Length: 252
Image 1 (cartoon, rainbow, N blue to C red):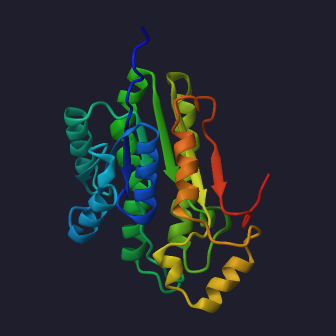
Image 2: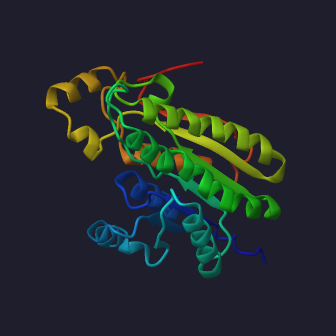
């Protein structure tokens, strides 16, 4: 009689945002035990998140942590290991924006963004990668952005951090490739999110006009790519960047 498949533990930072929630949903649908990680001081959003995913009957849980703080990530990893088991899949989706042209950008805007968008990737990966390599299995998916590939006006900090995410992913992929751990990047294009919805209708229509498939992306489009790279049988893909942008930016 065959043994039941091992239920992998997946951790998703930025897990209660629109994109993070959908990633949690699709990973749970793939049979993962999912831990959504986000800041504690978001009571209304946490309540809404739990209500949205209540049908998963405990397959998705929430843990509070600050990804910009190494000790917080270390304590988080210890709690998850004690309560749920070893971390098999890590999705680094936590991110913020602090937009301004470089002439007007303050050091605080630069450093705040870097601490979350780039340091957060280091903090989480550093705390799970040793266990993954010791066990001979791991899937790390880091969320970058099309703007890390193309640059964007008013986003020198964001574009630099997102480009750095993929550089980090390639280097770590080389370090872990023979240990059964893959490290990849997903780079979303413009998606139907509150940030895009906040721009004027005229600008939004211009963005859509520049996307060859003729529409904005959805969180499900991005989550599908993340779930694919997080699969047990995706072990021959590592160090890759998977653009999910509707053809907005193409490169060889």
